[in-house]
Structure formats: structure tokens, C-alpha cells
Image (cartoon, rainbow, N blue to C red):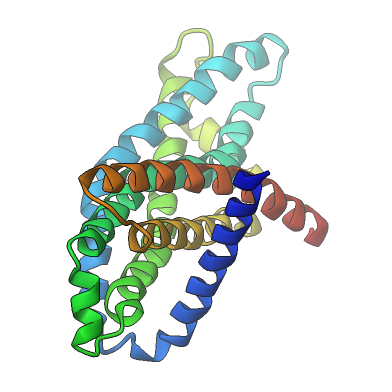
Length: 253
């Protein structure tokens, strides 16, 4: 029960951190260099890995479903299955988990180190608001970087599914046929669905990572514990919110 109340309290603190960050939005232009630096850092750290991961996810989707669908006389469904799965579910969720583990953990470690070694207190002494200086640039950067990575992920996943469908002897569907079937199923609202999910996940990852970093106290061991908590909480919140956001889109449609 104590852990439950502690979790509720931390969620409330994260929401307050989000509200404080929203209030700091007018200072975005002043912190634009930090925003751009954080944006490119996220891209450099994650783009190659996200492309490799997405290529194999799309390929595995086609590899697992293709022979079964061809056997049942439904080869045209392969492109539709890979297209919609990557667009609405696997692209946003897998990229969010990747960013939580690769970027969110780094954000928590950096802010945790600053907290432990009293750099955050030094900022307050110099009348510099840590929310404006530390949290705002990271939140804006991740909110825009993750949707862009998801777009790359979706496109590369489609490519991976097409390559497997074309080269696997049990499927043997031409790449053009695969893409034509994919285009029939995937529409702009489906892309908007995936991109909207990724923005929600990005905000959650940013809030959790910054909160855990700024709440770190103790020594180096505490930093490691904060990083672990950050990644675990981010993944749990991503999977929970995935259901509710998907449910919301179903109701809207």
C-alpha cells in the first residue's frame, strides 16, 4: 500500500512538473540553442538503431504472417497487415521504448548527476530556474524528435516487410504488389494515429526522465537507481497509455 501511495504521489509530482514546463514555454526562444542541441543529440543517438530495429520488425511481420496468408489465398493482406501494424502500433510503441531506454536514461543520469553534485542548487543560487534551463529544452526536443523517428521507423518497417515478401520463396510477392496493397489499407488518419501516439509517449518519457533525475539524492548509486526507475516507469506508462490512446482513437473513428 505504501508503494501504491508513493506511485500516486510521484505521478502527481510529474503532472506538476509538466504544468511548470508549459508555463515556461514563452522562454523557448531564449533556450533555442539548448533545444536544438538536445534535438540533434536524440537524433544522432537513435536514428541508426531505430532504422535497424524497424527493418527487422517489418521483416518479421511479413515472415511470420506471409506463408500462412499465402496458403489461405490471402497474399494481398500481407502489405495491409505490415502497413497498419507498423503505422498504428509497432512503430510508435517500439520507438518509444527504444527512446526511453537510450535517451530517457541518459537524461535522467545527466540531471541526476547535476542534482547529486549540487549543480542544480548552484543554478537556483544564480537565480536561474532549473525548469527553464534544464527541463524545457529536453521536453521540447524529445516531443518533436520522437514523432520524426517514428515516421522513419514506419517507412523503414514497410521497406523491411516488402523485401522479405519479395525474397522469401514461401511468399514470393512482387514489391510493387506489396506496396499497392499497403496503400489501399493505410490512409492519412492511420499515420496521424501513430504520430499522435508518439507525441504522447514523448511527453511521458520526458516528464518521467526529468522528474527522476531532479529527484535524485545521495551518491553515484542513487543515480543508477534513478536511471532504472526512469526506464521502468517510462515503459510501464507507455504500455498503459497505448491502450487508452488506442481506445480513444477507436471511439473517435
